[in-house]
Amino acid sequence: MQFETVVKTRQSCRNFDGARPVEREKLKAIVDLARNAPSACNSQPYAVAVVAEEELVKSVAKATQGMGMNKHCSDARAFFVINEEPAGLLAKTGGRLKDQDFASVDIGILCAHIALAATDCGLSTCIIGWFDEKRLKELLNIDEKKRVRLVIAAGYAAAGDPLREKKRKEKEKFATYF
Ligand SMILES: Cc1cc2nc3c(=O)[nH]c(=O)nc-3n(C[C@H](O)[C@H](O)[C@H](O)COP(=O)(O)O)c2cc1C
Image 1 (cartoon, helix red, strand yellow):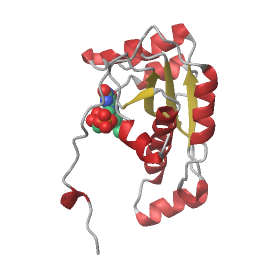
Image 2 (cartoon, helix red, strand yellow; image 1 turned 30 degrees about the horizontal axis):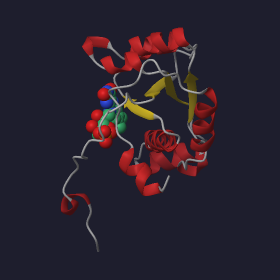
Image 3 (tube, rainbow, N blue to C red; image 1 turned 90 degrees about the vertical axis):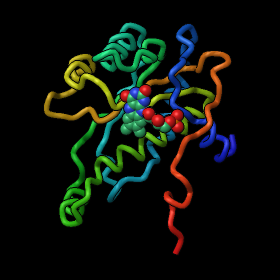
Image 4 (tube, helix red, strand yellow; image 1 turned 60 degrees about the horizontal axis):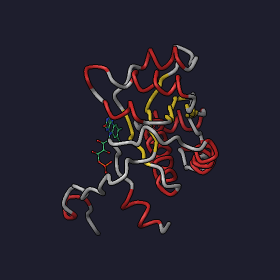
């Protein structure tokens, strides 16, 4: 796909085809591509858990559904769970000196790479910020001291799921040109 097409067709999918499994090779290809994402001081303060095993997928879906949220995750066929890892000393020190949370920025960039790479493979995704972190740590054997920062639901969109018009800030408010 052309980059422009990838960007314009990526959208948060809330209508996955629950009957269509996702090929593990595609998940691996997505992760391998996303590994090229940039990060502050190349610190890469993250690790990705790729969940495709059916029962575990169901359990992860449930962990995103507290208070009636994220019902669409029931039909996702895979999840990428993004954990924060300790940043390198340089990135940590730089972040402190400049009062910036580079790890969160890096994780956001990684997630964008995953979502766009998935789109390029014909998959759909939904980045999920609403999840039961404790439950995910139990399910995926993640050290309780670590943070789960984002989850990305993935699958094939149901047939006929329309491409929505993007609602975004007006261009004038979005960018200033000097
Ligand atoms: C950090 C983050 C957390 C999000 N959490 C959720 C979520 O829990 N559930 C959901 O359905 N969408 C979630 N979204 C998707 C956003 O609602 C969506 O990206 C936004 O409305 C723009 O729509 P689009 O992705 O279709 O272009 C999240 C997106 C981001 C970046």
